[in-house]
Length: 148
Image (cartoon, rainbow, N blue to C red; front, top):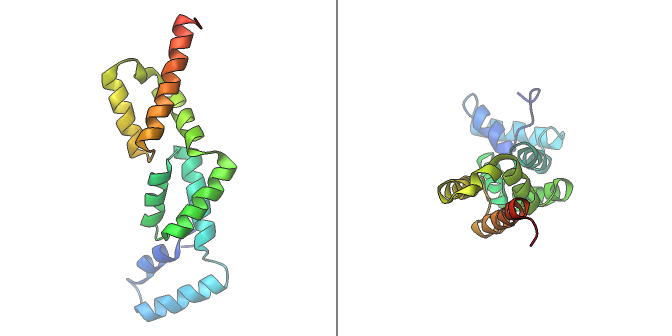
């Protein structure tokens, strides 16, 4: 199970409890932690880093995804903070995401609303989304009408 990818303690617990007594499973997981084969902090960092880099997820969605894997809030926040130092802030990811996927949709109000909803589902805050979209719309206007 550990050969394919890293797992959080809770993920392994959920998988192993089907096959053995809970007490035995906890003992095995304790031994794996002591041996360095399970490290929730390293797992949380790597998972958050991957989701930020590949899917450009925002902070709220990252916390939710880490919680699904059994990572506590404190560890999740630390992992997100560390990964953001390496990859870039949520604002930078949001601007890149809009530039890559949504810039063409910002021309009319209906598609702009769809874009806001999509970005909100990806874990970005409403204020952050509005500010980023405002910047992009200003850039589009400058491109179309020039700096007057």
